[in-house]
Amino acid sequence: MQKLLSIEWLKLKNYRTFWILIALYAVLLPMLNYEIANSMGNFKFNGMSVFTKSYAFPEVWSNMGYLGSYFITFLAILVIIITTNEYTFKTNRQNIIDGWKRIDFLNAKVLLVLMLSLLATIYFFILGSGFGLAYSGSASNLFSGYDKIFYFFLLSVNYLGFAMMIAMWIKRSGLAISLFLLYAIMIEGILQKILNWKLGNNYGDFLPLQSSDELLPFPMMKMAAGMMGANVQVTMPQYFVTATILWCGVYYFICRSMLLRRDW
Image 1 (cartoon, rainbow, N blue to C red):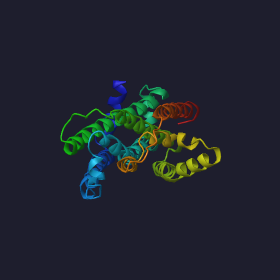
Image 2: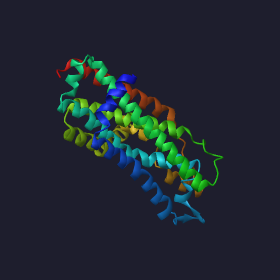
Image 3: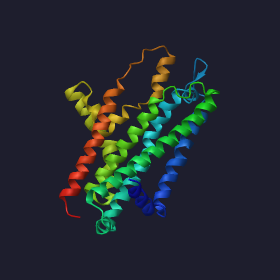
Image 4: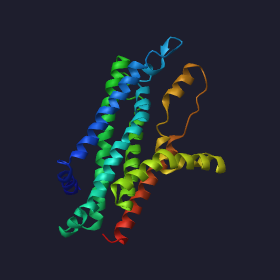
């Protein structure tokens, strides 16, 4: 495992696109949260700032997790570019010549997905801790709502794993990125509404990307409803956790099947 990761790192450490997309994720995520917490902090209800309160513990984890789910797209695009480059520049074949098995190629990309997801989650925890301390004034509730940190990791693995599957299927970066964005932004939302309307019981919420999105829903409406004394519906996240893990397994076996059956 360490050898596979070290080889992936050798491919990436001097790759400019890698650093650009990582920088965009690392810079834009805290900037947006800072703007929301400060520029929009004047919006108040009963003398209490809705947006500023959302960055105190434990609400900060839900809020930053929801916004972070949008920025994880930068890392998903990165996974697509890295994977399709293997086919474009024939480095996948060179790996086989050097003694790799096809499954090693897949496992190297899976490890990359897991490592990027882990680093994104660590960064999410650092940012959330910083904002929470700034707007709470203490660390007494630092680990309250810690389950959202785990949910963010699952969401990251889900999005990046889905992107890897699309890249191995299409093999062309431009087309794969377009298809990923089209599905993530438009197609799945339409399918979700159709399934929920036709079948009921919110079956559409268990679609691939939506299943992890349901773990980190938009939190400010829930907070505003609570401040107004309205009843807030409690969800059952364990179903979406299970669905997310199952979908990640599906991505792996689809990629494995494609690699073993298709010519390189």
